[in-house]
Image 1: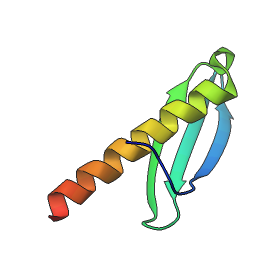
Image 2: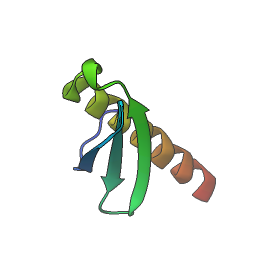
Image 3: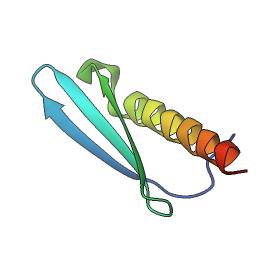
Length: 64
């Protein structure tokens, strides 16, 4: 599924890793991933958005 709405992305350096949070402002759903900072901002952002999309899809299926 391709995301058509916006999300808020936050990057936080935690020691040797980066925590990336993706928040859907419409539903206030937040997910986080932890990754290697050498993976690059674009890749980490894409992974966080994929996880957010997965969680939103799962929530939509549960609610009917």
